[in-house]
Amino acid sequence: FKKENNEKINSFGRIEKKEQVKDFTKEENKEGKNEEDKNNSEERENEDFSKKANKNSQDNLNDKVFTKEEVSFHNKESDCWIIIDNKVYNVTSYIDLHKGGIIIVNYCGKDATLAFNTKGGKGKPHKPKAFEDLKKLYIGNLKK
Image 1 (cartoon, one colour):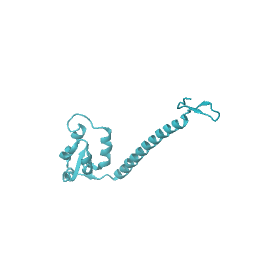
Image 2 (image 1 turned 90 degrees about the vertical axis):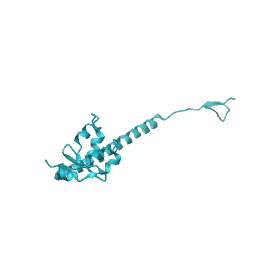
Image 3 (image 1 turned 45 degrees about the vertical axis):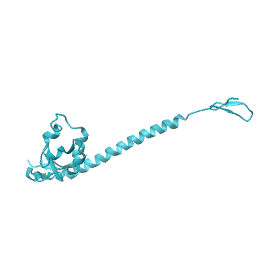
Image 4 (image 1 turned 60 degrees about the vertical axis):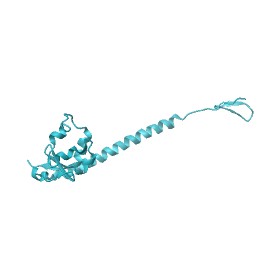
């Protein structure tokens, strides 16, 4: 007798076909669970970001106000503040993470609004992630 992968010989010497039944409900549940886990993870990340943003908003109820002169003292890579749209950001910790490279150092202690809004003069806006990152670096407003 030739025995195929899906056949077996029973105790009476007869060939029986093995049933290869796949439990799709388990796989679907697994896939659904994986998708659910992914969605939950994204929700947690959004919640974490929202918490940080809310904390920043609460912290900023008493926003610190800086003069251009105060900002100008923070003009080196190891201590870099920039002004964008009359808001002050401490970007010192972000310089190494900046996808545009070290170009950001050219604006330490200065108004970087035009550079930020045109992606360093390229005429392109930054991606939404850049705005999210910037929010985390906010330290106060520029004195008008």
